[in-house]
Amino acid sequence: MKKPQQVFAGMLFSVFMGAAVASGPVAAQEKAKDANAAPAVKAEKAKATRKDLFENDKVRVFEITFKPGDVSNTSARPFRVTRALKGGTLMRNYADGKTEKNEWKTGEVKALEAEPQPYSLKNVGKTDVVLYNVFMKEPKK
Image 1: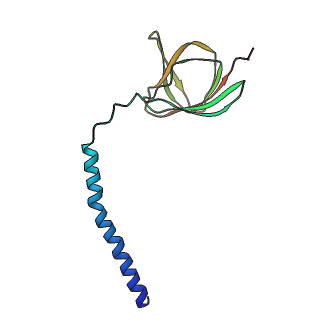
Image 2 (image 1 turned 90 degrees about the horizontal axis):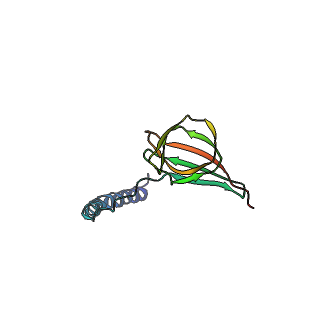
């Protein structure tokens, strides 16, 4: 390397090292501030996440992911076809206290009849459960 390039490389290295050393105490001070901050508000119980894929006047298609402990909204469900993209164990919880365990195997497809009695689903297993759903809509009159 030529002399000017060596000098420039040395200065550049010094600047980066100085910046790294100077930022250490700042990061430590910010962590201390965070530790003294007011405690966070207690979070709601985990909700299953739904990704809408398609909807028209006849069907609604979506993917729903349940992490362990996640719960779905409580609702009645129309006729639907469901495929397990990732299998696992879900518990149906009805308003009257009745529960039902549902096992899903990865790749399994089920045609489920309409269910007018509302219920929620909870992932009671230790792994994520991902379901691909096609809900049929009632024809408009």
